[in-house]
Picture 1 (cartoon, rainbow, N blue to C red):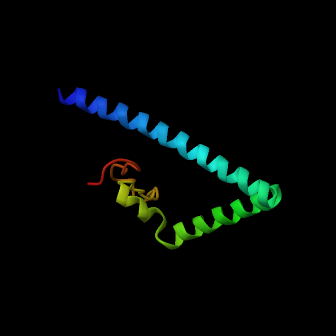
Picture 2: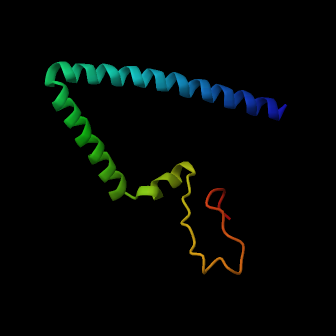
Picture 3: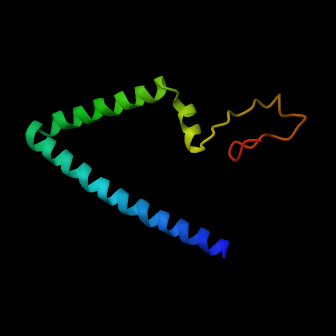
Length: 97
């Protein structure tokens, strides 16, 4: 019974993610089309580039990969070969120990 509920929840989550992605894509396309009509193609592209760089700078300034920990994303750094010569290497992905 638990396996069925889990598979159903995964399927519903996947369907919801696709619906949200389609909805947001349509809204984003509408926004870009309106900007292009108002500002022109070159200025719209420049504006989107500036916004992308600003969001990237904010991401790095406010913690970068550490922010992902709130969603369960853990980035482990690779270990130099000298440290792993006498022991098993730590996997780069997976749950924390």
